[in-house]
Each structure stands twice: as C-alpha cells, then as structure tokens.
Image (cartoon, rainbow, N blue to C red; front, side, top):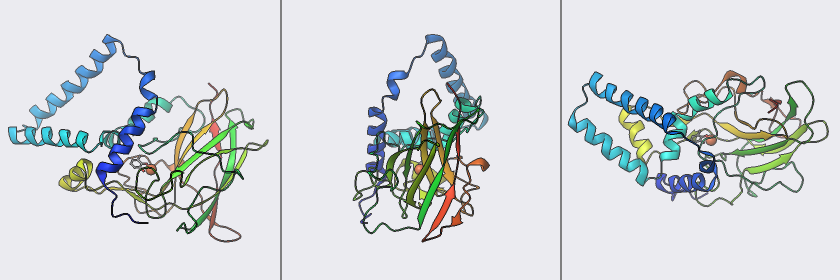
Length: 280
Ligand code: MBD
Ligand code: FE
C-alpha cells in the first residue's frame, strides 16, 4: 500500500463527512434547561482550570490556535472519540445486563455489504496479516439464541489503516455485514489488525507530542451487533499481549473485551466470542 499520501487532514475530512452523513444529528433533542445545565458546567469547569492553574495569555492564545487547527484538520470527531467518548459510552450502557461494549470511534461506515459467502471479510488479493477465524454466538440476556442477529465488523489492516479513511484501499476493505444462522452462530474469516496510531501530523498529534503522550491504540476489531427487539451493541475486541492494552490513548479497553486467541487448525489463529444483547 502506498501510504505516502495518508494525512491527518485527509482522514479528518473523511471522519467529519462521515459524521455529517450519519444521521446522528437528527436524533438530537435538547431543552433550554438541559443546554443551560451542560454548557454552564462546561464553561464553569474551564474557567476553574484557568483560575486554579493560573493560565497565562500566551497559554490562552495557544489554546485558541489549537482549537482553530482541530477544526481546520477535521479532527473534532477524532478528538472527541479518543478523549471523551469512553465516558459517554459508560453512561449509555451502565444499565445493561448483557455486553456493555466499547466506543464506536470515528471510522464506522454503515451498510457495509454482506459478502456472498456470509463469511469472508473483503480483503485485497495480497492482504498482509495473520489469518483469523473469528466466530461465536449471539444470545439474549435470558439465554435464548437470536437467529435474526446481524454482526457488522470493521477493522484496520495489518499496517493500521482503515478503508475510506486512508488512501489507496478498496472502498469496503475489511468492512462487512454478516448474518447469524438458526443457532445464532457467526463465523468470519479475516486477518488480525495492527495496533493503530492516530494521525501524528494533525492537531491531535500536535497535542500528543506537546504533552509527551503517545498516539497508540492497541490492535482491535470493531463490531456492531444488532437483533430485532434488542439494544444495539457497539463493541471492540482486543488481542492479549498487545503492548498498548494497558495504556490505550482512547481509554476503551475493558478486561471482558479481551479475545482468547488460539492457533487455528490450518493457517493463522482462531477465536470465539459470544455476544449477549439486552432486550429493548
Ligand atoms: C480508532 O481506530 C479508534 O478505534 C478510535 C476509537 C479512535 C481513533 C482511531
Ligand atoms: Fe479503531
């Protein structure tokens, strides 16, 4: 893959565009009371930081320039999903008895095609990476299987790039929608993703470098698991031994999301992960 053209601004523009087209905004309802409550708390917290930390005019101007650059680079989706979404996800799923899941992040694209064999993730002919058979069952919290469930899987390739957010990849590379069988089982042939480094040449990367942080997320699979009458589960699954499982820049790793990776009978590895959905 020619990654020489991969840039923060290009992937940021794609993420911004994807968010605008997602339909998420049409669901927003905010009363004046709630806007007042949240906006007052946010502005109040920021003012308190300025007073507590004795923020100077130079620092205030650096912040102003940086916020302008976040917008110019299209990195608001990246910034918000990396540093804040995990708390939103925690609030949204704390009532669940089944899987709580993890954050969606900026790189989900809805309606990925279902492969003809309902099993093989779309890859390039020479797709690099360790083959992975990823399988499991989808059930409801009462233990009944969900034969009408759907599993959407999206992931980075073995170099850490997502199709539609990095150049020179087929549109639906490593993105697919799969249905389960009558027993609620799914089986997907894919490859293991690489750890993901968020773009270092944009505003988020500038912040990371200036603060002495690192830009890495551990390797992960992204999923949306849905079934009629059940809450949509958005999840990520992780690989044991990844050096960033304990210091994910996006704070999105949970112990229950760790895969059990075993050698496959043929090539590569296999893993089994069951999903439990909460009724609506
Ligand atoms: C990713 O791949 C991701 O999953 C998140 C949450 C943020 C940035 C890049
Ligand atoms: Fe990701």
